[in-house]
Amino acid sequence: MSRPQASDADVALLLEGTFPYVSGGVSSWINQIIRAFPEVRFAIVFLGSRRADYLEFKYELPANVVHFEEHFLYDNLTSDTEPAMRPGDAKAFRMVERLIAALREGLDSPQAMDAFREVTRHMHPDGALQLDDFLYSTRAWDILCEVYRRDCTDPSFVDFFWTVRIMFQPLWLLARVASQLIPVKAVHCASTGYAGFLGALLAQSRSVPLVLSEHGIYTKERKIDLFKSEWIRDNRNVFQRDPTELSYFRQMWIHFFEWLGRYCYTLADPIIALYEANRQRQIADGAAPERSFNIPNGIQLARFAPLRAQRPAEPPPVLCLIGRVVPIKDIKTFVRAMRRVVNQLPQAEGWIAGPADEDAEYAHECHNLVRSLGLEENVRFLGFQRVEDLMPRIGLVVLSSISEALPLVLLEGYAAGVPAVATDVGSCRQLVEGLDEQDKLLGHSGSVVPIADPQRLADAALALLQDATAWQAASQAAIARVERYYTDTLMFERYGAVYERALGRPMGAL
Image (tube, rainbow, N blue to C red; front, top):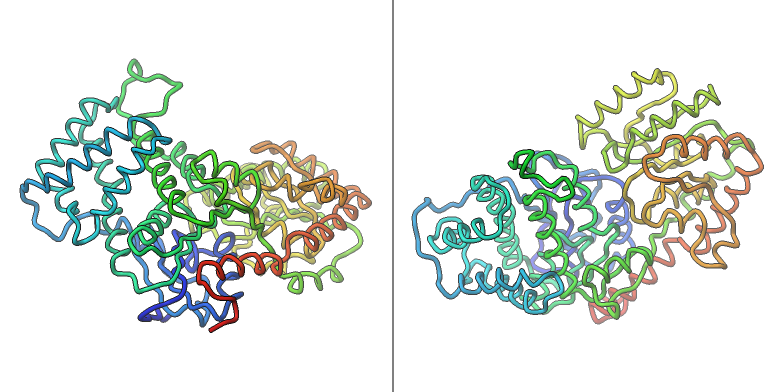
């Protein structure tokens, strides 16, 4: 697929690990937004881990994407310069020392954020704080050794050394990307993290508006990943470990992403959440309340409403999980729930509709679990499917995730008249039971169950599938809720106002 290039654009979309290489979720939303504003010329800056992880586009780039570039943060963690001892800029490293001292005051320290921003101003290719100085200078080495002796609770200096290098080196790549990006009038990030850091660099260096839309809270999701990550070392022996404490290196990574988030929140205006609980989380993490508000996801009713006529009057005994086969979707809980469902409803089927190539090991474990539970005839891995093809044939949309924001798949099911059983994550309770009194009067559009509880998930699904009256009532509540609160028309109106403010012109003006 061609990569368009341009000399300038209206909005730079900064995307980390999503569109156009990953399907569903945030990527679907990004595709919606781009196509909703054909008069806006978008430049996409895609950030990934390694090139090998992102081989082909899952979406065709819309015509108004006039520029595309991609950068992989961990492909080349080496410098073009031959390693050699160098002194490093004394003034620049005094800034670094002030930052380290200020960071000990905690996340809420204004002095720490001022010091953080001062350091980032000097990381660009012509700045005083160069990557080669970070990698090879005697001043960087001295600071590294001092921090290790004073703060590190892990006995391995080698692991500390390489953790610091791997953690911070991509920031210089992003500083170079910021300095070389084509001129744009506004920047729009779909997350904090590395994309948010890049957006904050652009807002700070170019004085352009920075719009931040968070579907999930990036720092929260990274914490979940870091808690489970096996590649993070803990070299303490059993007598040195406090089982109530995280390892030093996990804490380092968590604090790192927390600071990237704070930096982005400091410069973003507006800061947009999908729902109120996430907005409050953003505020707790440092977002200014006066710059934050909610814009829920919305779906195209015309795409799904005709499917209602194809649905049977009785609930089909098919539970469908639409999503990637990855740990955060907790496919294993869905599979275990299916064992209980099939015990009581032998004809029931569980469909898993989503790509399985993102985490091959986890996908293999899920297949093994199906076999070990004797569910080969009942649980099917369908791979990527068109949602429209699934909806007329299923009885429930099931979401077993351990973390979500405002999942589009529930709204798509609602628009087609399909009730949901979802874990109590993100906005799922709001989507199923309603947000305020007026919304709650519409009724429940399914059930909400605890995380990682196969029995509760199975029982909630059975209660709907075995009671046609309850299933029909949930279906009607689902349709009413999505039509009143979660259409793409409402979402586009709100984002149109955001872009009008950022670009200084009404949407539709060329």
